[in-house]
Image (tube, rainbow, N blue to C red):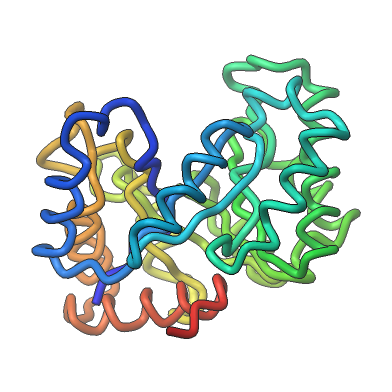
Length: 256
């Protein structure tokens, strides 16, 4: 069964119909949804959902956009929160030099602090990287960030970076943009990455795959990404579902 490895179910866009969204996910064959935080409040909400809904697991952390909020108090709270067995990773963390909503130095400090937090807890990390490929790689290598493994979510880089990430202990996750017509470099990565390092996600409510581009996304649509990945790799959808779900269970240490 499918696993959506990156969703934001706590988003306001699901306030009125979350139960319907979850039912559609179940009907589409999803067995697990990884609900990812992006600041302290959304991380608390992700864990609350994971405690209530058996198929949901939480990821907690502070996104580069909100890195100015990360102080010692918040870091300590995240540390305690992440001890919960329903929390399977630290994230999403990283660098975003496209929007620059937080000063870059604050982004760097928050990224490194949360890498260290994950290492102390032996949890994988979920990385957000936009227009900061080289610096993200430099920090990963300097901090040995892949020691407890990790996921490069919604991968947007070139094949050499993906291979380098794999060597550092990371998995590559593909989202809706894999289905877009201009996704040539992403398609190349999807075709050539070893099968034991690939994951699929929606990043919902964002990045709806074709033919829903521009509309609110939801976990059920991870099936479209699985289908596209199967087409690219010349496998059956059943095979891709099995491979990506097995990989998700491995990296997030899901045993049930």
